[in-house]
Each structure stands twice: as structure tokens, then as C-alpha cells.
Length: 67
Image 1 (cartoon, rainbow, N blue to C red):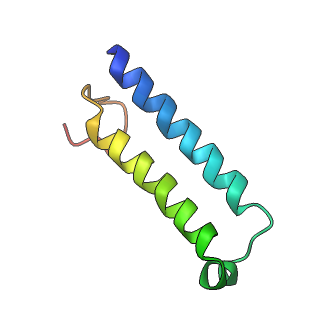
Image 2: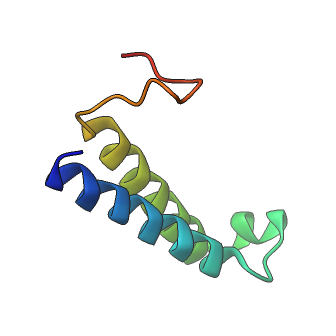
């Protein structure tokens, strides 16, 4: 695995942990009334998606791998 991939995986993990922390003790209805919560979660999802898109080495052991 390339060094950049490890960094990206760490970014994904950090963003996922942060999203979980933000969402704790929240309900679905909170997304409708709390714009800051919504934006924070969307940003973390964007970070995860962008980092995942840029990972260079495929892992054929993953069932969703398309490479």
C-alpha cells in the first residue's frame, strides 16, 4: 500500500469517527432543525468519499472492489 493511501485511509477513519461523535444523541429530526449538524455530517461524508475515490491500490478481497 502506498503512503498516500495510508494517509487517505486515516482521513476516512478520522472523518467517520468525527461524524459518529457529532451524531451521538441526535435524532433524524435534528438534521431538519440543526443546520450546523447537517453541514458537519455532510462535510465528513465528503471527506470520506473524496479520500476513497483517490485510493490508488485496489483490494480484490473487498466484495465491492471494481478495479
